[in-house]
Length: 219
Image (cartoon, rainbow, N blue to C red):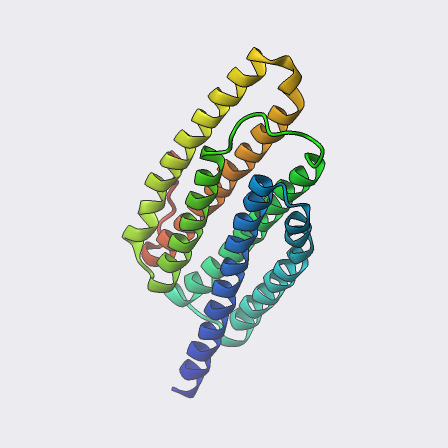
């Protein structure tokens, strides 16, 4: 009983740190796109600087997972629970790296005018944040249906990306002088679409945790 109690307490710490990491990633996504909308280089620099904290959290989470596996020797669902947390931490860290890439793009765009008003790219960022929250909620609640719902959200994100792509290419074709600023926006939209793919990875980790079955939410 004492061993099980120690395991449950360690798992709570693991989940707490995972939620903290997720919250920081959400903020990084929001701030990177807000920096784009506002032309706020200081905010972009804040996203870049803040990545170190997220990297350290990932290392701590991986260490925690390893110690739990070695010391507790979990079996079946307990082992899947730890493995899911490990994989989710990796996906969150990669999302944070993508937010940094967006912030760096904003920094490069400092002296450029926006090629068109920003409407759908902020919507993409909002959807990405919703997907991160949903994925982590699904993990904490071990909710398979909530995890499956990430597939539909990803479809919405992909549709927005395609719309942004079409509109930006049209702007570039109409005015070749916009090629450079349009290219930056195309990369940023693609970055956000990739964040969506990482959130579906979280959903897949949750489904494996609950069912023991591998699935692909990007089909």
